[in-house]
Image (cartoon, rainbow, N blue to C red; front, side):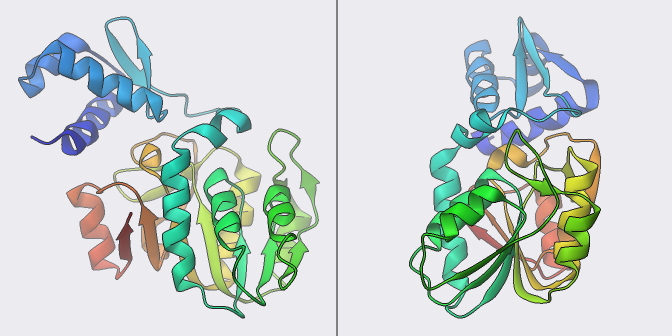
Length: 252
């Protein structure tokens, strides 16, 4: 059994039982305790699980990590995802970019594109894109969330609903095994749903820490995307969902 598959199965077991011990995992996978400890440490490093003495449990489903911590997790993977994603966005395109550290990496990767029209509810994305003098940046109105610069609220949704863009670049906090897209803030989710409604193509950008991660608010389903960009080989079930809904998978 390869490590990537074992990681996905460990996450499935932890999700089912809330907490699993190292001994349980050793017995289940027929590997050494040292192997399981390395697996759990690797999953904890990408914030997929929370390590506890003798085992691990899921991270909180009600509260996201602090912005600065999120920004550093899987940084190289996010940059790789961003570089691959921007290759399908031609110069002269219009696009939404939502809240998230991965979408901020996408904004950085768009610095050499020309004549883009960008609408965003992310202050950091606006600051990054404003460095590209050939691009036009429109910032959505609404309440600024002070912990991460996200803009949310009813007025944000009304603003987004005025546009019909070529692309919607979407980041997400978690993807359940049934394909549900999950996040923590109901108000943020409603803005992202508006972006999905008003985009001709949805480009979903997620690093491996998001697969199997819990969050309490359902944004939608993975089958609403047109392209999924990730650094992780998803489970067979996720691949089946992508194939059956003609979602193109791009693995960096």
